[in-house]
Amino acid sequence: MNTTGLHGLAAGVVGRPETTDWTVPQRWADYTAEDHAVWRTLFERQTALLPGRACPEFVTGMRSLPMSANSIPDFDALNEALLPRTGWRVVAVPGLVPDEVFFEHLANRRFPAGRFIRRAEQLDYLQEPDVFQDVFGHVPMLMHPVMADFIQAYGVGGLKAQRLGALPLLARVYWYTVEFGLVRHSAGGLRLFGAGIASSRTESVFCLDDASPHRIGFDLQRVMRTNYRIDDFQQSYFVLESLDDLLHLAEVDFEPLYAQVGQQAALSPDALLLSDRLWHRGNQSHRCQGRAMP
Image 1 (tube, rainbow, N blue to C red):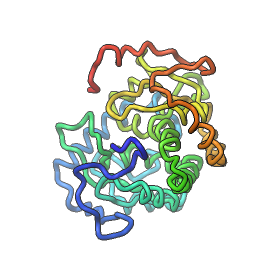
Image 2 (image 1 turned 60 degrees about the vertical axis):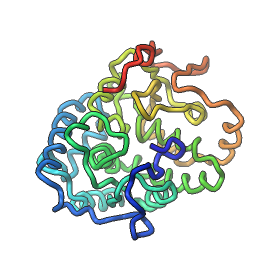
Image 3 (image 1 turned 45 degrees about the horizontal axis):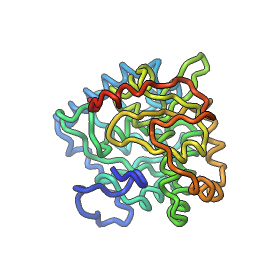
Image 4 (image 1 turned 45 degrees about the vertical axis):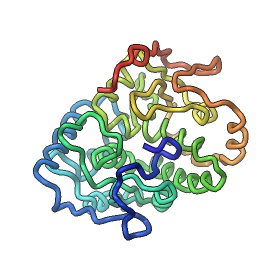
């Protein structure tokens, strides 16, 4: 995965599509029985695991969509539910796409989703996002107006950050919210809402229960300075007080922050600062033991 912008074209992806926006037909009828069986396995175990772990907005979004264990979702059917709710729609792409293409889609409320699905032997880890991570992980939260507005604002901001040469700073915000974000639950404790966690059986447990990672109150400049892991569990997770905090982020003028944060040293994923508001001080045992991500 491209660690600069998260979304850049990965090695091994087939050649550029004929369309300038990289969209392709989903070709739902081409999925095999094996493809649907992989989806079923992934779907059933995640939907059994996430209640009480995922934020209520994720669970509600999932239940409001035409998505079940029976088969890989048809994007046209998903769009019939998404469009009237938040104005978003899902478009199929062959895999990871260039940053500018990704941002242009988001800025226009189109979520680019890989149309392929992992093989049965890849159930627990896949570096390049497939239809399960993209659709199961992301689309339920697109049913929520706050997340819908935030991701569109991120697309607009991404195009600007590219022009300013500041994309790595903004990419960290996306990573620690949309992909690997946690949020305080009104009844106490934490819940996950990031798509990278919601689509992962192992990280859905690790992010909330394991003693290894730090869980730190979200601070925008702190997050913009913090590097992240793309090949293992996160060493730190950042906690929003409420999903409504994303609305405030969408209104921030990032340009002066790029200049300010860009002059400061980047932080390692396991760093702690005296100014951090800690939910949990991790012991970093996962890293120290050198375990590979299961």
